[in-house]
Length: 138
Image 1 (tube, one colour):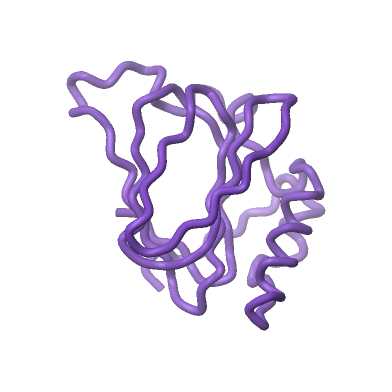
Image 2 (cartoon, helix red, strand yellow):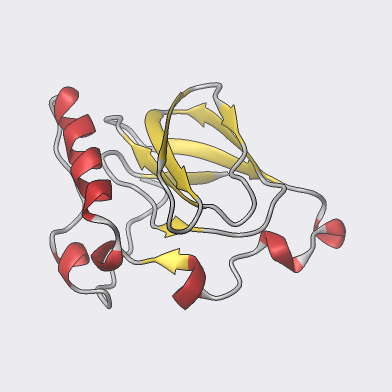
């Protein structure tokens, strides 16, 4: 199970098909899109389930005041093909500093609806090499 802090979000990434995302706790949204095309906004809450399509970028946003939890379920390791893994970080992950400004704007707008602001350091958006290691067990 993965955990991420309140008022934060994961970097966009993509991989092959076959991963089912289950939300056991938290509230927020995910954004998914095929490269170069429109983004799809997916609200989620405790009990939500969704599957990112093959090679679509996607990322998860925590709009809660507490850490959110999600499970990424996939086939047993010995049956998993390499297409289910992020193969090349430079090609298959988007750093905060390199993301579409719409992502941050949307996150901040959604947080404001709940009377909150982002916990992500401003430096993460201006320096692609910024090393921000939040604690997943907070």
